Length: 337
Image 1 (cartoon, rainbow, N blue to C red):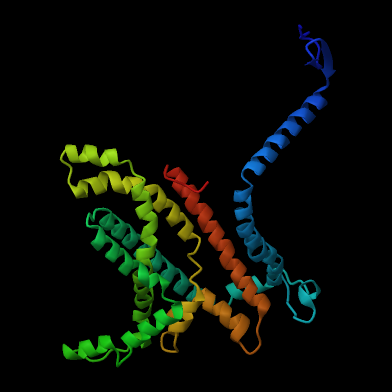
Image 2 (tube, rainbow, N blue to C red):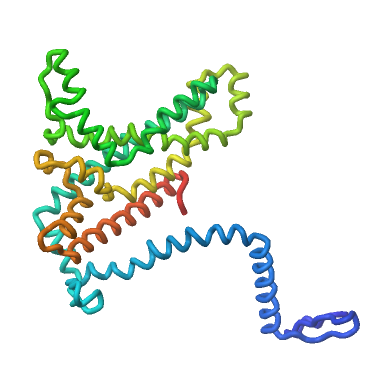
């Protein structure tokens, strides 16, 4: 059978003897049905995986996307009785009120300084720990170190803060040791200049062992023949770390750094709130604790004002993630998208 090149209709052979012209719309329908059949077959062959995926997607829908409907509270003068849609629309008034308030710059400064300090102080210890564990050959010692470093991550925030307060109290273990060496007791939790370091380094101690799991997995994926060739060439362990291991884990490190950039204004209020007291409030008050106080603790809770601050924080975090990702792209490093 020959096809006329000037004929715009395609022809299908039926039974090898007859040709039936097919319009372009019929071809499109046929292609769509073929794709649908392939998708349905793929779904049937992997329905267990889709069933497992349904649970986290349902959680994400219920707790992450549906609550976005309530974000409009930030643009209203919310009244509990009237509800969200019944409350009057005030536009950007709540945002302007926050930006023009006397608390804006002190709280923003505390939040940024604390999170930048925490980002850089907590970024390198997991990498160093993972590199060290990667070169430990004695299995028993390696497992012991891993257990000791991982364990603090599973201590609850309340218990962790209780340990910190007991250790650093005027009659605590650290001050008892300082008295033995002739240094008077220091009120660590009442000294504003000490508060950020106590918060950050206690977090590093608690989470460094757990965070290094990601870098250990990245190190395990490096081609072992690279190390074998380096050993044959006489490279030392430090040279292998510099030339093989660090370049191998750099993409993961860049991705984690980009993700962490989105949390520069999100400290989390539990640990901060538990470590606060009237003496260190000038350096420990951050956006999350301020939202908590304005929206829930104050005598007249202002839900709209608190929602506006929370939305402001989320938008800035999104901008920081996009900016960090674009910067990583320009530097030809690993990026999220």
